[in-house]
Every structure is written in C-alpha cells, then in structure tokens.
Length: 137
Image (cartoon, rainbow, N blue to C red):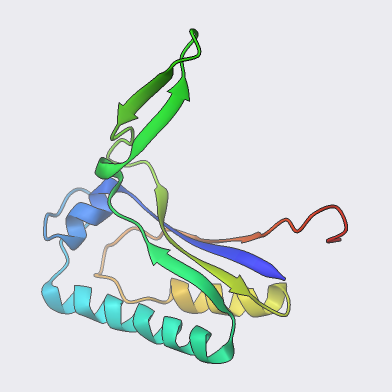
C-alpha cells in the first residue's frame, strides 16, 4: 500500500535553519543543518535500497508559497505568502510503498528522531494512506 509521510514546519523554522532565531525556534548552526541533511539522506538511501521509496521532496519556505482561489466572479484570486509565522505547513514528504501501517509507522518514528537544535518545535510526522479507489479496503 502507498502512504504519504509528511513533515511539518513553519516560516519561523525555515528562518531558524537559515540562522535567524525567533521565539520557539532557535537558530541552527551550519553543523546542525548538515547533521539534519545527513540524517535525512541516510533515510532516503535506506528507503531506496528497500524499494519502498516512490518519491520524496523537501519544500521551499512558506514565504514562497502561493494560494489560488476563485473569486465571486469566477476569476482567480492569487495570494502570495499566505502563511503566518507560526502556522504549520507541509515542509517535505515521502511517498512510500510499504507492506503495512506498522512498517510506515516505524519509518515515521525514525524521521521524528531527526536531530534538531535544543528548544526546536516538536512537529508531528503525519502518515496518510493513499486512496487507491473503492476496492482498496
């Protein structure tokens, strides 16, 4: 079965990774940032070797996000950078093909153990099964 494993973050988290601290998000050092990249790289390597990785991507900061809605006249209404400083958004994801929910939960727990600076926010790792249609069970 396919699962989407999502990592959440906020604009403040992205700023902290760039070296700018804020309330609740301490600044990351270059060493801490490299440790996080190495940790996630090992997860990706292991998931590739096991054949479970379908896709995985980190996403750019929320400040570079765009919302597109329809106005009352049916025309697009475009809003840049719609997220506030503290609102959690999708920061990255893996699309995995795993035997069962227990296996993908093991992977999510490993992701949750990624090293971060002391005092960093504790965002959950979210697992969502991919809907494969009405016969998926």
